[in-house]
Amino acid sequence: MPVDSLLDAAASATVATQTVGVYPGHRKVALCDRLAGAGVQRVVNLGSALSGSIGGPYDAMYPLHRFVSWVVDDDA
Image 1 (cartoon, rainbow, N blue to C red):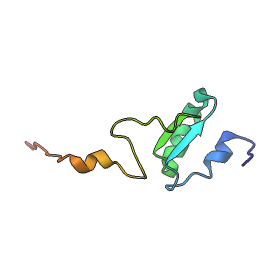
Image 2: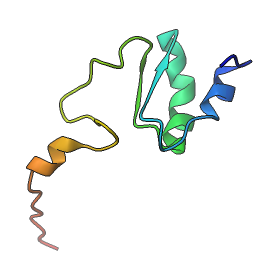
Image 3: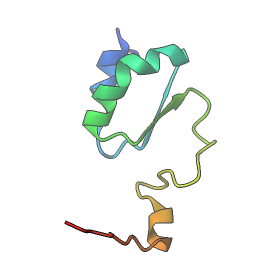
């Protein structure tokens, strides 16, 4: 969809938007806070959405966390 500015495009992001690709990549800095506030989980360089990272979000969840048991050593 054509927009006048990247901030206009960011206004369309919701919690249903997992990944946003941005071109040129240096413009991600100006968008990250707004996209994160809208619920976006990943902001990548345009064309890099398929190269995820270990432990990163997948299908709106973090599957690696299901295989880990978190233990708190609390001395308080």
